[in-house]
Length: 230
Image (tube, rainbow, N blue to C red; front, side, top):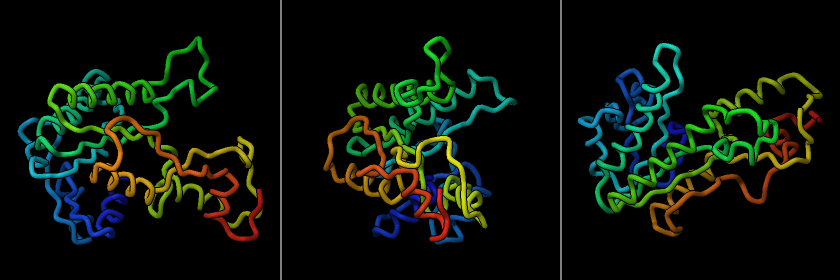
C-alpha cells in the first residue's frame, strides 16, 4: 500500500520521500525516481530521518514471525509508531494506516463471542491507542485510517482477483454479490492523506471505504472481462 501511495501522491505534485529499511527495499523506488531514505523506524537513532517531514504516513507493520517472539514483534510495532510521533516536527501530521479488522466482531460476525479476538485485529486496536496516546502527550496531530479491503493498480488483492477471474466465465463468492464490499481504492487513500495534510478534517480515527459503497459485483466487474458473470 505504501509503495503505490508514493506514486499516487507524486502524481498529485507532492514531494514524497519513502523510508525503507534497507538498500534492497529502496532499489525499485530509487529506480523510479524517488529519493529514498534508509532507516529502521523501530530504532530511536534512525527515526530522526522524518524530522523535516510535514506529513508522516506509517504504512510499516511487522508481521508475526515464528523466528521472533510475539512480545518482541509487538514491541517493534509499538516503537515504529512511537518513534515516528516523537521525531515528527511539532506541526507535522502523523497518519497511521490501520485496518477495519480493528472492528473485530463488529465487522466479522464469524468471530464467536466465546473465542479470543484474532491477533491481527487486537494488534491494530493496540497500535491505534499507542498513536493517539503519543500524540496527546506530545501535542502532535494524529490520524488513524481503518482501511477497508485495499484495491489498486498494484495491490496484491487486485492481482489475486485478476488471477481468479482469468479465463473464467463464472466464479463463486462466499458472500452475496449485492453485499457492500468495504473496499477502498488507493486513489481514495491518497485523497484522504492530502485532506489531512491540509487540515480539512479533524484529527482522529476514520474508517476508509469508498462511498457510496461498492458491492462485490461492482468490484469484480471492474477487474473482469465484460463476459464474466457471478
